[in-house]
Image 1 (cartoon, rainbow, N blue to C red):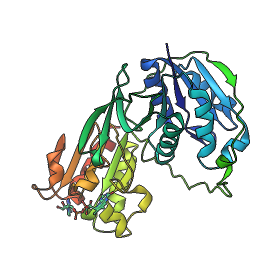
Image 2 (cartoon, protein in one colour; image 1 turned 90 degrees about the vertical axis):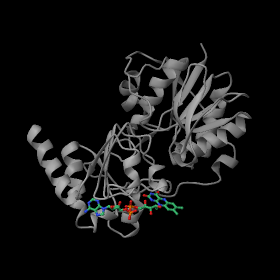
Image 3 (cartoon, protein in one colour; image 1 turned 90 degrees about the horizontal axis):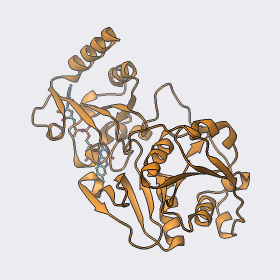
Image 4 (cartoon, rainbow, N blue to C red; image 1 turned 30 degrees about the vertical axis):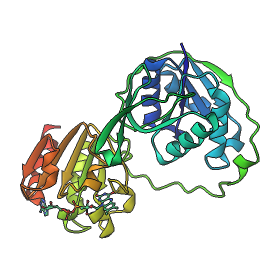
Length: 314
Ligand SMILES: Cc1cc2nc3c(=O)[nH]c(=O)nc-3n(C[C@H](O)[C@H](O)[C@H](O)COP(=O)(O)OP(=O)(O)OC[C@H]3O[C@@H](n4cnc5c(N)ncnc54)[C@H](O)[C@@H]3O)c2cc1C
């Protein structure tokens, strides 16, 4: 069985959930092999083993994380010879690694993938999510960037073999050095792109102060908060929470859109959500075209009642 390499996405000692999703997917495609780049593997080893890789390649040299993406590409390039495929997360960094790696391997890259068959045919969401395409890399080792939350997690505990890897970085890989790292303040809420529930507010929320209503529902559900561009551009909510074509792409189990009209650019970031609920006072709002459950009403009446009802049932 061909080895399917999975680049483990980790920061500050924490492995991103998408990496476990990629390991789950890799097991269905061949022999899953995790690739850990940088120091700190030991602390994450047990958690990684839960998702059943047959092997873990550990490139522990701290120099590998001193530069931007190029060293990661060189590690993967060294390991990819003979691999069946390389899977990375379809994050900003993951997609950059995927593109560069495919060039180095003289193969092909598929991004924003939401599923892969055992024949390595990828289902991917393109043109801002308006088209689902099926595609296969026909030359070399495919490099596939998979969206967070697209694959249902399935544990398969095992005891992977660990192989230490050393890579002599090229001068080109050291061209851009990281000079400082700033840890973003993280609240109690889950990460927007990894959350299984997202509650988003739009222009209909009417102001920064009113976002408390959205946050209240989100906290009751253990959800992340998102916002439309109209809301972030107005300064009502920080830009890092914008969902859409020029914001984050989310694919949670449940997406709740309150006071959002459903413009194509917003849909591009959320329409692969498994269940979509919208609350909008305009019955003609385009968001209702794609919802599983729609409430026509004033969000300031509906959302607090919903929050109260969920709290009662907890
Ligand atoms: C190049 C480009 C990129 C873009 N990228 C993005 C992007 O990444 N993300 C994004 O979101 N947008 C993006 N946009 C903007 C997008 O086109 C829309 O303008 C934006 O999504 C609208 O946000 P909205 O739905 O919150 O506001 P509106 O379209 O103004 O809709 C507000 C909705 O709230 C409803 N409403 C009002 N009051 C209430 C109430 N009390 N209760 C219930 N409902 C109420 C209204 O009926 C209306 O449907 C982009 C645009 C361009 C041109």
